Image (cartoon, helix red, strand yellow):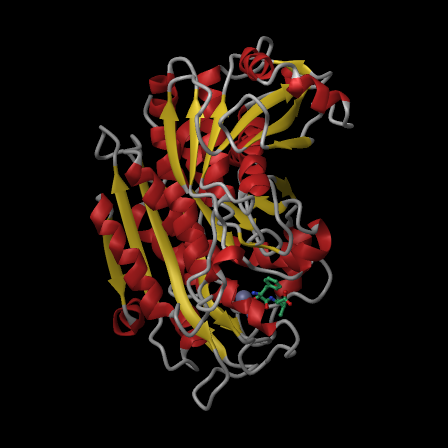
Amino acid sequence: MKIAFAKSQVPAEGAVVVAVLEGKVLAPSAQNIDGQMGGGLTRAIDASRFEGKKDQTLTIAAPAGLQASRVLLVGLGKAEAVDAAAAQAFGGTVVAQLAGAGDSLATVLVDEIAGAGVSAAEFAANAALGAQLRGYRFDKYLTREKKEDKPSLKKVALALDGHSAAKDAFASLAKVADGVLFARDVVSEPANVINPETLAEQARKLAEVGVDVEVLGEKQMRKLGMGALLGVGQGSAKESQLVIMRWMGAKNEDAAPVAFVGKGVTFDSGGISIKPGHGMEEMKWDMAGAAAVIGVMRALAGRQAAVNAVGVVGLVENMPSGTAQRPGDVVTSMSGQTIEVINTDAEGRLVLADALWYTNDRFKPCAIVDLATLTGAIVISLGNEYAGLFASDDSLAERIAAAGKAVGEPVWRLPMGDAYDKQLKSEIADMKNVGGREGGSITAAQFLKRFVGDVPWAHVDIAGMAWTKKDLPVCPKGATGFGTRLLDRLVADYFEEK
Ligand code: BES
Ligand code: MN
Ligand code: ZN
């Protein structure tokens, strides 16, 4: 979706969009349109049930007195409730309403709203972000789609007084959107296209925006003693990879970095503990944690964030084969701790064990946050509304929760503790990789905690959030890119030099 900012003017072509507050309160530009329509706007509203409540819409096609093809009214609700998130949702609604309406251009007339939490410029910039995110489409393999079935809308223009301030505000949001769309693209790709090697290649492209990218192959990981990660990938024809991305944007070069670690299982068949066939195709998105980590590194570099940040992603394919690891195998992790692999389908924690240990050992970060589609149990606990948050540090947990809330990627904290940790006891090794059905997401987090030492650490289980089966305000159904915006905001609010 192309985004443009223009001076406040009723357009001579395409669709024109105006926001309406609850109680049918028309802003100056809506009044202007109503005037040009000879009162037709007011009459159309009065003839409908449209009241300007949040997400209500009303379209007036071929409006008399205007050159525009149609007028779209979008309800905003009460002025006090208009904030950045509401502006993003508004932008998303504009795209959802007009995507297939026939116009290639939509011009949104933005006014200053008295009593709102955002200025007109901030509203416009956030509406543009919402439009961009909602306008995402992964259609490269739809080779026979008819033209009339493809979206007509190509461009959203935001028209307002002082549009250059809006354009400036959008500049850094657009870089974050780049990161989100990158993440959605690689999550959407099937597993015959995105495997550990090709995903590492995608990550290498971040060098173009100034990220330092290093890729370790199996030989190097074996030397480091990463038996837990390597065991997961040993049944695959593709080579496992560890990608290390560094963005050193802080003025103080020596400032300890904040580290992000991602689970990148490019396909999770379950391995020898193979999954049932129904729904197995969904496991192409078992690398969504890694995608979000790569996405946020791209966003941070893109907007030249004043922070030292490290992103580490463990990339493996979990396959059954003659070389695959077996239930009962004992592997030695880089930390030296041994693990009895009871279930080869509990592979994400094995990958993260070595990726987390490596990250802490090499970079001595000030904090580590990992993102992973780790457990089906978190989907049972929280559904598709919140990601699960686990942390060894209360203040880090609070910051993550606040950042998630601010960007509409909410997380809910779950408890941890020694009683849960005991469920991981093994007779033959230092631990086993599963702790039984009870509290399955928590015992998975307890497992990870054994590989992070004393550094403040948090784990976000995004299994319920990485993919959506229904359209959301700023995300069409499919890959969400969940986590990219959360981590970007976490950096912006708590880790960036001011
Ligand atoms: N990738 C899955 C978790 C998952 C399930 C993500 C559904 C998204 C949707 C993970 O590797 C897995 O298989 N976990 C097992 C753990 C079990 C064997 C202890 C699970 O959740 O069933
Ligand atoms: Mn699994
Ligand atoms: Zn998995």
